[in-house]
Image 1 (cartoon, one colour):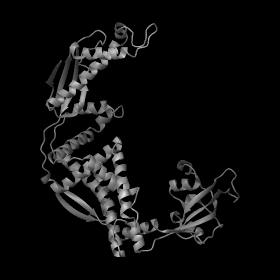
Image 2 (tube, helix red, strand yellow):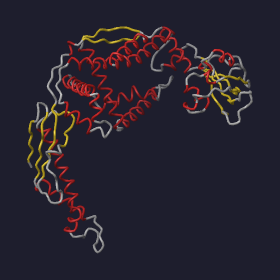
Image 3 (tube, rainbow, N blue to C red):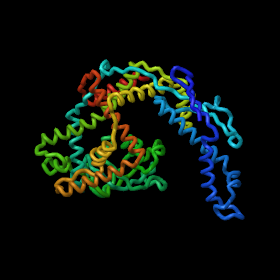
Image 4 (cartoon, one colour):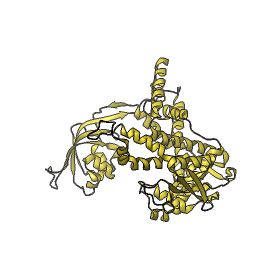
Length: 461
């Protein structure tokens, strides 16, 4: 066997792999002997078919399979042994690979194009970045606390309809003369009073008792097509021309009263914290809300910094190779025409991958299985298994053991674990960029933050 590397450009090369019969034939013979044990032919017992007949039937496909295996193994072994830092993956060069006759040839030559990662320098200390700390307004914080109180509130069945009640009842479509439309809407429906867009219609419901019937126009009550479709039990596209009057007979009135602000509620809402007063609860809720904001802020930060670093870092790329590589590895999802339209976008993506790789390598950033398990256990699973108040130490230990087992089992889900790995890696890169760059902290409310996001989006167009 002979492996040769030929330079074809500043960042490209050709790898030529030459195989002789001795490189693959012993394994081919071994495979054929194994195949012989399974062959079932008339006139022979299983496993007793002459090897010459087995060879005649199966040698060509077995030979092709074995040659491709040996070729592939040695291609990547050469890359590894020579510490070649490649971009993408090797691409078969069909023009320089001689035509193959699998049945007659004994010597084979395979040619592959590769691209090499470019050298570049990265000085994060020169980068000026902005980190947005989003502060909730009093109005938003109050609404957030009300939502928590409703979540842990008490469900009641009041006598009359209020502004935030949920109604169960029967909806019937009417003809223009006010009589029931025989082939019209005739269905049970749930209506949330506070989602009724038109005040005059909302007022028709408020104060009504169980059994009362209200006549109204659903298409004016629910401007959102999705809500209208849900009430009418139709597809959204079927609702665009619906303008009929309907009657709605109220069967049930349900109201979720907000939980009282006391220690029992505090413990239910935040079982893992010791909260005694309304002020402490408000501060805890604010911290909770800020965590959500922090996630949005971090996403914006990494997007902006990645754009900035790609723009500020000089990186030469083997563009033609990468365009070909993207098309050939996209499984038909991306065409050469697509690449030509957005070449800069694709190349910027490659540059960011190189920059991110350099950041992680130079700063020893990695994500371990233990960190992934910890994320599953402490950040993801509590959303599905929230801590319960008044649990004993033994119950807490049992729950902890259960969570650990579930998290460990989830690690085996490769696709999801790969996503979590990338998420945690990006989170570490974000934290490092905030440490290494010259960061300006800017405190804003959510409205101001969204204006920054919208401005950034419009600037890209």
